[in-house]
Amino acid sequence: MTMTKTTKGALRLMTALAFTAGMSTAVLAEEITSMAILTPETGTDYGWNQQGIDGAKAAGEAMGVEVIVAENLGYGDVRPTLRELAEEEPGLIIAHASGYNTAAPEIGAETGVKVAIVDSPSALSEGAVVDYTASGHEGAYLAGVLAAKMTRSGTVGIVTSGEPPSWNSQSAAFAEGVKATNPELVIRYAVIGPAAYSDAAGGKRVTESLIAAGADIIFGQGNGSSFGMLQAVETTPAADGGKVMFIDVIGDKTPIDKGYLLSSVLWNLTPVYEAMIEDIRADAFGTRNYGINLADGSVALLKSPHIPDDVWAEVMAVQDEIVSGALVIEPHFDAESVHALVTGE
Image 1 (cartoon, helix red, strand yellow):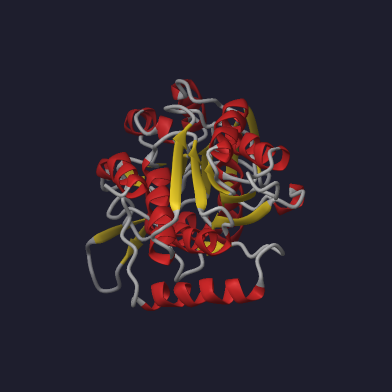
Image 2: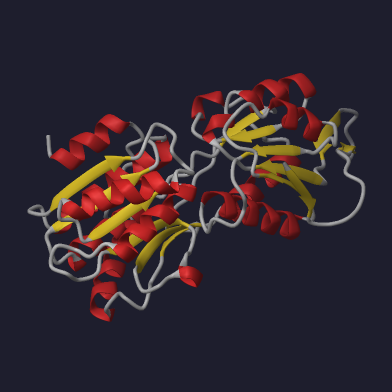
């Protein structure tokens, strides 16, 4: 485990009593001066882990909250790390992995520390637990529109490292965007494994299989496994001998692009974490869950140099419809919906 602090100083949770003028009843207003975030992989993946860490740091800086980062923890039992962090008495622990959504509430209840988890909206508990099952489905729909307009073969592929709710909602919306743009297109769908988030070799192998099946654009979701997906498109030509292009999610891999990154459904988690801090200070933590969307900029589609201006303009016209409410993209968090949309059944 690696732990760092964004600022120096003692970590403590402070509570202040605020009294309403002219009233004898005391109202408890809680302050938060520190928080922690746990991630299963390192914060250098241009994706889930990096966006979580970067978002927490940015929120901490904006809101005056110190941030502890515990990264590269893997997908096993993190209870010992959670207890260790709880001893620092942070005002919030962010458990940034679906595999942590059982352990974190348990340790939160045991230690009295507030926790934020993902992929478990029903775990909402006033004053104790919130969920941020962030869904980039609106951006994924735009990615599907883009893919439909740029495919040469008429076949696009979706590769995922598992089927958690966030991935499912994006896969479903991508398929909807493709079909709404051109219902004649073929969508190939493949899952590396039940929780193959860091399986780069598996990502490469499965992506190659979809390219062999005719896909010339790959929509990939996979944390560390996405590097294998990107390697596959870089080394495997399409059926017509041309390039296979890659649409990523969450982060921006432009710094390592070799000419194959078509776009990415970008997530900005800073507003999510800022909202959590604000709710703690307002004594409203645990009264709502959190999400991301196009309207406030917490979701965006990356414009790469590989996208022609006219195509981009058409995609942005669809974005305007979504933001205005003229076009509503409903999230589908279950794998069955994804399978039905992909097969057309």
